[in-house]
Image (cartoon, rainbow, N blue to C red):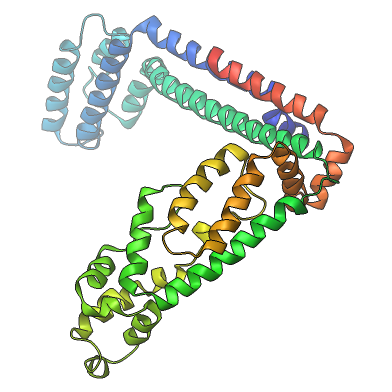
Length: 377
């Protein structure tokens, strides 16, 4: 039975039925409130609460052989309370009946219990407000479950579409004709940037990184403001980055022999060591497998402008070779094969072999059913 219930709560049809039931329950609860009137029910709630406060105030002293003055005060306050009730208050007769119930010489706890019993119907009416709030919350929770399940199906559709696309890949395609120029460029640009980082003045290296902010597809993280200001304004900025990082490890007294403001260097360089340690050529590489043609073409245009600022001709020649290869008609076929070869797991390959078309159609239909239900209910 639990397995059947679990299946019902995740199956699209079951979820739609849950949403429809929650919608109907909310509408029934709203109709029940409107039959009486929300404002009238709230007024009734206030009357019940007021009466309970009155009972709490007098019950202990006005019962049995209690304080006679409390008994008289209770009688007077009860009459005044009932007389002030709205004429169209639901269940007003039940409140009025309490005047006769308590018109006796001695009161007992059973009288107060009887009084509360007489207000049972009034409490039930007021309960419609809570029922409506609960029904609205349940409806909202059910919509959330349906929406989350629809999102899960959407993700499944995306994954299955990917598998279907990769399943059509020509795994015998000569991907090395694409891999070779990309690996050549990536190796050369890494070596060139490593040399640039290790030998050029830190001011020039970080200035280059700041320049790349005008090329959003290159992707360097921006230089921290304090570090950029330090290398731009201090003589130490003419030192290579490895030297500055080594200086940052010195004690202030030892560092005082090498730079004019040792504490400023330790704050700016030492405080940004993580940034500097991570500064490498990865934003300049193409990577494997490469991006889709349209995306990569735009990025390569930016890379040509950026890499030319520090790299030698052999790096640029390799980059241009990649650009030409991306423009070839067979790029998409080779890229798809490369992605399939690189990304597909053994389980995904097995799933492709068994066929994904039926699963994809089912996932699309399930998502559509749930989206339609969210629009309709």
